[in-house]
Every structure is written in structure tokens, then in C-alpha cells.
Length: 297
Image (tube, rainbow, N blue to C red; front, side, top):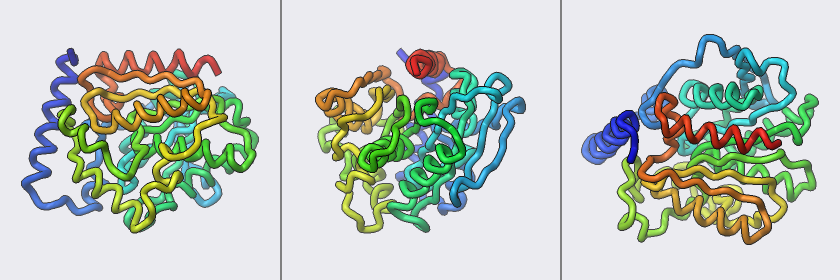
């Protein structure tokens, strides 16, 4: 059973989903300004030092908690937001918390957003930021990649691209509720899951905005359709109360079939990217699992 704190978030998400169906669409600039996964918009902790950098043309930030500034180990964090929103403001607190818990510096790129910059802009920026990071002396073997939702897809596509180019991959990856298949969720999932955040129609709108007419089965957009052989160990975390659980289930099966070490953790009754709710016991458990996984590398 979800904790009382998580139940309050679930109720909020259901109310937001219901209101979305009855009111006019929120202007995109306003939606971006107020975007908060799980309704949890919190400031970055004051003790986290934020250093902006230009990563081969991509705006990015170093996030250094007091216990990480001297670390040679890095968490490369790719934010979610349906490719049309998301930033350091929305995802920095989660990224910084992960960095402090893992005792790793966090490198946080802000890729270009759709619809102004449709596919493959977000992927191109993620790849450019990675190549900049490794060009300034950070060893891929010291990096764990993490991403949520669309950021999880970009993280997976990044590893496919690095492998195909013969470049060194990161040590491991953590994919949080990854959005891996832009062709849309399995139609039967709506009959089995009461997703508090999304409808199938909403996910189709998100995909169409990003793709702008591109093939939704392109592996750079929907990395579920790529070959997964040769990838580093993967940890997948997803809630059972979200449509995108099927993306993680299918990736876990395909990656294991390809010989990849993969762990799938499905949290009962929890929503999309529940880990952003940092004050809940469910998030504490999830981040402990991420730390145990990442600290192996």
C-alpha cells in the first residue's frame, strides 16, 4: 500500500488529470514554467553548488553536493518532461539528491525542447553533451547515466549510439519510468492500469509534438526497437500504476535476451516518476536501490 504521503500525490495527480480533460490546454510557456513531476516543485538545496557550462553548444550544469565536489565519479542525468518541458528547475532537486546519495558529481544537460526543436534535437544535444563531458577528461568508466521518462529514452538511445560508433559506454545506467516506445502504449494497458497521470491520447499528443512527422519506430526516438546487445548493466524502476510500465517490461525482457544484466523494479501502486517525491518512504527505498546498484561501478 502506498504511504499517506504518496496517496496524497496520487490524489493530486488524479485531480490534475481530470481537470486537464475539461479545461483548455495550458499555454506551453506557462506549462514549462510550472512543470513539476508529481506536483513536487522544490528548490535545489542551498548546499548544492551549481556551475553552468557550455557543453559543445548545449547548456549544462555541474551539481556538487558538499560530499561530491572532489569526486572523480559522475552521474550524467537526463531529465524528462515529454520532450517539451523539463529543466534544472524541475529535475535538479532529484538529480542533486541522487548525486549526494551516490557521492557523485552530477552533470545535467538541458537539451532543446519540442515543438520549437523537434526530433532529433533532444538526442543530438544529449550525445553532444556526453562527448563534451568525456572530452574534458571524465572517463566513461566513471560515469553512471540516469534519466527519467523521456530522459530515460534519451539515455538508452545514447548508449546505443555510442556502441554503434565504437565509443566507450558508461559503466551502468538507471532508467526511471522510461518512455521508450513513441508508437503508443499497448491498447490493452488502459484496461489493466488506472494511470493517475496519463491517458493514451495524451501520450500520442506528446509523441506527435516531438516527432513532427518522423517515424515513431526510429530507434533514436523509440529505443525499445533497437538491438540492446553490448549495453552495460541496467536498473529499471517503474510504477505499476502507469501505462509506461509496459515499456520497461519489454525492455527488461529484450535486454536480458541480448545478454545484458538488467534489473526491473516495479513499485506496486506507484505513479510515473514517483522518485521525484523526495519526502516519501517509497522514494527513499528507490534511491537506496539506485545507490546500491550504482556503487558497484
